[in-house]
Structures are given as C-alpha cells and as structure tokens.
Length: 254
Ligand SMILES: Cc1cc2nc3c(=O)[nH]c(=O)nc-3n(C[C@H](O)[C@H](O)[C@H](O)COP(=O)(O)O)c2cc1C
Ligand code: SF4
Ligand code: SF4
Image 1 (tube, rainbow, N blue to C red):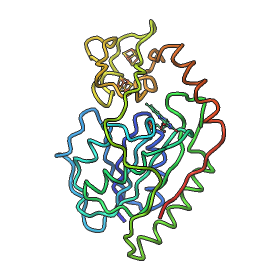
Image 2 (image 1 turned 180 degrees about the vertical axis):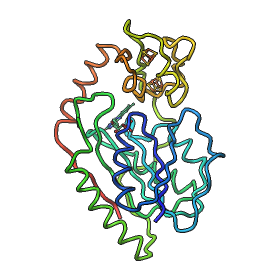
Image 3 (image 1 turned 120 degrees about the vertical axis):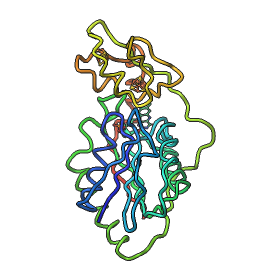
Image 4 (image 1 turned 90 degrees about the vertical axis):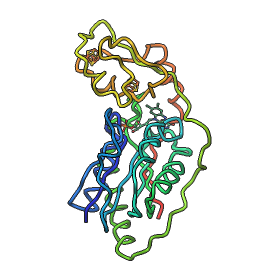
C-alpha cells in the first residue's frame, strides 16, 4: 500500500511518530513536509487511488500550529483515506486533534482513524525525553494493525475525537529564541526556519509576527548557540513540572 506521510515536524518528534505508523501500514512511503521553509502546495502531486495518508502535526498550546493548518488546507486530499496524528509533549493535546480532523476533512481527506501520541517536549526537553520510545513504538504498531484491519474492511466511518474545533487564530506564545555569543552566523537556523522568520543576513533579527516558537532553530543550531531567555526557560520548566510529570500513553480512535 502506498502511504503519503504528511507531517509538520519542526524538531522531529512528530515525524518519528508518523514514521512508525507509516512503516507499519505500508512499504511504499512518499513524504510531504509541511514544515519545509519553501513549502509549495502546487508542486505536490495529488494522492492516487487507494493511497492512504498519515497526516501528523504537533499540539501547540492545545491547537494545531497555524502554518500546519494553513499548509494542510492547501492540499487536495481527493477523497484519500487518512489517519490523523496529533503529537504532544505529555501535557495535553486539548483541541488539536479535533482541529486536525476538521482541517483534513476540509482539504478533502476521508479521516478513518485518529491517533494521539507523545514525543519529547520541544520547549522543555526534560519532559517526555526520548519519546517516542520502545513502549510507544509497540503501542503505535498495535494501533497500525487495527487501522489496517479497518482499511481492509472498507469501513470508512469517521472516528469521534475529543475536543472542539477552535475558533480564531492560534495564539502566539511569544517565546522567541535568539543567538548567544557562541553564534558564528553560519545561517543554518535562517535556512531551516519553517516560516522564514530569521533574517539570513542578520540572524539576530527575527520577525516576531512570523515566529511560531517552534524551536527548530534551537534544536538544529550546530553550536547550541540559540535559545529562549533563561528566565523564560525556567518559568516554562516550572509551569510544566506538575502537568507533565505523569506518563501519558498513546491513544487510538477508530
Ligand atoms: C509552541 C509550542 C507549544 C506547545 N504546546 C504544547 C501543548 O499544549 N501540550 C503539550 O503536551 N505539548 C506542547 N508542546 C510540545 C510539542 O507538542 C511536542 O514536543 C511535539 O512533539 C513537537 O513536535 P516536533 O518535535 O515535531 O516539533 C508545545 C511545543 C511548542 C513548540
Ligand atoms: S544556526 Fe546557530 S550558529 Fe548558525 S547562525 Fe543560527 S544561531 Fe548562529
Ligand atoms: S525563529 Fe521561530 S519559527 Fe523560526 S525556527 Fe526559530 S522558533 Fe521556529
């Protein structure tokens, strides 16, 4: 079975979850990267008959990241059956799975399964560290077997997922990473920022109206020279301590 693996994954956790599901469902995978800084929906071929999509996005403040929703809505699902996947940092996913379902349906996908899974918290990496881990992989592969059985049965019913479709714009978190003195202006962060918020000519300059606080620039800097302010980091870690301390498990909705 051909699987279109469609992900928005600035720091890779969402992609790791989607990879596990996609490889458990089929062996012919084509990837569509919604976090590509040069994303161009018109350059992406339409899904073919019988193709299944795995569509994965992270939870940001309990919603889909704005660019993930905008870019997914530019695709034409053409009725292809889809598994939607929300990946969160072990706090909560709130309305993000419901929103992902809504956006995928409006883009023309037939949602037949939904998964919520956990990956390392990309802002506070001390939480859900190393996830998805072996236990997550086993759970996700078990889900894939159940999803494959539903696909084979021809049952295209839409799962009921928790949460509501949120209205209004995704809130901006205002956590803007900046370079430290260790920065050598290599330009990697500017080239890889999913929304081109960093000025390639001066990596200290960030367009605050574009930045979505995705932390890709922090994760990929080869000199570990980009970060949010120490006080902000301390406050985020402290705020999440209680809500992130209990291990949560992946969930499947069929
Ligand atoms: C701006 C922002 C907001 C986030 N909000 C939440 C949240 O509401 N709940 C949660 O459990 N994790 C939250 N996270 C953690 C991410 O959902 C989680 O780390 C996810 O795996 C990141 O995906 P990525 O690794 O593909 O970038 C947030 C992360 C960021 C960057
Ligand atoms: S990736 Fe790191 S070292 Fe390179 S320009 Fe960005 S902050 Fe500086
Ligand atoms: S500048 Fe903002 S949007 Fe761009 S990679 Fe960094 S955190 Fe993400």
